[in-house]
Image (tube, rainbow, N blue to C red; front, top):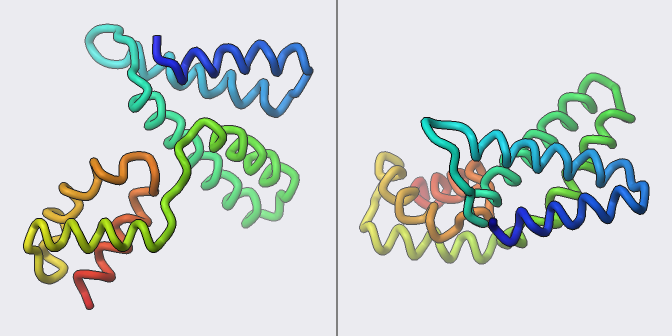
Length: 151
């Protein structure tokens, strides 16, 4: 079993004992999403830490988007609940890259691929995604690449 999944299970038990409702429901949701991912496809498998991070990243993004939707609809209490869940999930994710780090990697990827112009964005993304994996959101990466290739 992956170390991250083990940590989630230990933290689940700890949050039950502490009666921390937000952490409890968030970790339960995260473990459920991991379990769904493990049984998805033709045969069940054990997820690696990297795959668990991808699942948690996807769940954190869902929370952020739901919070924005609730806030836009004037439902501040639900928006805050989603942000609280997102904060718990982010404790299990690697630290996000700064803009400077991301731009440096984008420049390296552009130099490595020899890409020029916005049409070469796919080549740059193909090189960049494995290097960034989990430390920056896809939309943010694409925006940085687009800005560099357009300049």
